[in-house]
Length: 465
View 1 (cartoon, one colour):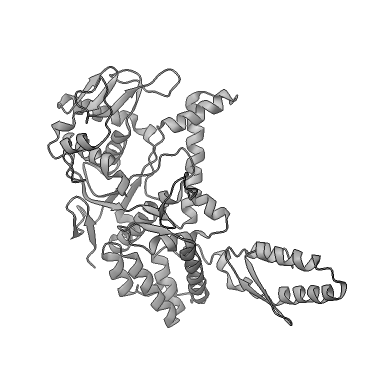
View 2 (cartoon, one colour):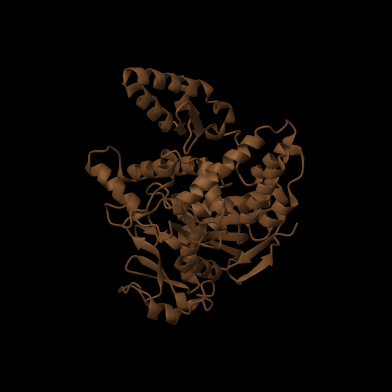
């Protein structure tokens, strides 16, 4: 199977040829761990989770190294820690910062696990690689690509002649069309910070330029070099990182003498009901918000993968409902798979779709065909490669809990009593409890009918027995 990937660097879809087929290496920019991951943060996680699965399938599970970092040096993390200290929390500021980072990383893992994303091979924290960052900055200064001034270390953008190639911009156009920081310690407005000083109330590390902390861009270059080597196969992230973050990574890594990444992949952004997600529009929500509302992680995953990663993804309530209905159907079929369901081959149409620049919409179409054919073994096997069937049947889709006869009879008896007493309180209470368990309630003159609804929770249903 030939995997084709769209390389942002060349703006073409190319056959993927790893540097070493026995050691395929991928780096993806991870989150800044200052709060809960919002829905847009989940898109690159799921896009590169599919790529990780595909590479493991093609080259072997032990032949792929996937690195996704945590940025735990950030002013927003510092601010939270300072507020906690001011409120009376014990411990040093550094300890409180670590505590906040631990907390948000735990949240991130819980949320991404719920979406069925595999953990990367390595999840480095920036604070564990300060020495490597300092060494890289010193090397760039020695080579004339960076300079130190007033406690800062800065990269000379014009020293790298190919700056802007990834994003298709020239340095002069960037200056003319963008807001750039004009600071007295900069030789050129486009130069970016590699190291900056820290005041006494901020975390910092000793360096040749004084006590301070690293700039954002140097983190990924140093960690990628340390964990993947001077050259590696794939670098990925959201399109919002293409400039300036990825552009700056390339410049400093190349000037340090590294080959860096051969292939660059970028996923497009997320919208909600056709609009950019923002707090001002009231359509901003986190992954945890949806999970707490009873939206299954598999449903979030399905909606995300229903749009090709290089197109903007629009989250809508209609898509959510359709995804849940589809997955209920698939799980109802796949739960009847035999004990040898995982010994067959994967569907060629589905695998060709994934190999064609991660065409997940086409892969989902292939699963629809498999579901309609009614073969539980084949359907489950192919759901697995898409990340929909990893830990057994999810509780929300467990068809063994959908036999509602006893609840229908109980509600109907309550209704018959209420017709005589004219007191419908018990009927209304049971209906409310059923709806809270994600059960749809329909009634006609003679009978009560119950159906699985949005956010169905078998555990809540059991409380009505």
